[in-house]
Length: 378
Image 1 (cartoon, rainbow, N blue to C red):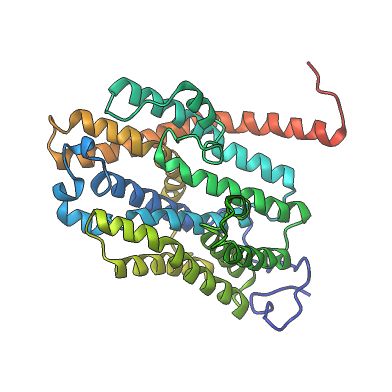
Image 2: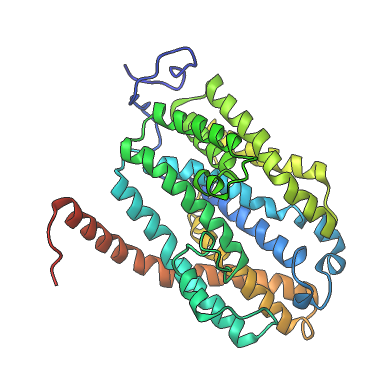
């Protein structure tokens, strides 16, 4: 039977590997690349005009940008949009792949720009000396592994905390990929992870939280459910998963929202609206309502996103601390933001694009030796 979007119903038996509809996606979803850049710019605007340390601007950023802060104060929620998109994109890219291919694709995607960003951030902070404490060299080495958070080592840049959440999601989802990613298994993963997250929410055992990764699970799960809608069509079960994820996600971000409210002008009702808007725009993607948004600029936007996110915060604060006495604040804010976008593009062209095929080839060869039981040569 050919599975059309209307075929997957809650009360209908779902085969373990349903046939995909004729127009099922097999590549990138262009509009998602644009949304990723929107999320990154949201976070950058938050860090520059709302959450910057006093040393960056010589005073409170919310006092220097009082009207702008009313909007950029919600920029931290770009991270939650990132996580929803990640669930969508990872489910898309992992379909019909083995766990080895999944591992290679994630390493190639994450590590070249990340390792460059760790070293570049450390060098700039050391060189400019903005008052930020310099990490010991051993901490820098641990940061290069992306395991600093579970090891209790301070991040070279505070934004790196999200990468452990991403890695945790990959590790859990790799179990499904190893078994063979299907509609049924993806739904089971969503329901099971939400249930485990609820069960350990109040557990005093830190290990339980580390193993389950319950803090941001709702957003990743929502992304997976949205992708299943995009690929196989909507049904009540998937909307139920999205609804539960929305409610749990709001519960998860609320303590952060209360902390942000104490540090600057932030409407708590606005937090609910922004989180809901993130879910709504991804629902529009899932229902193919935004398929008309196309163009090569979306590919460029997607390529800028990851380097921009990795590089903008600590380097940006260091530059602001050095220049805010000499450059008016608005030209400095706009110029720095534009410069970060340009640097992100250069990192993609000079670091990511040349290294990705080499790293992919070497890792694929290494995995082939493991599967074949051959001894490595040389």
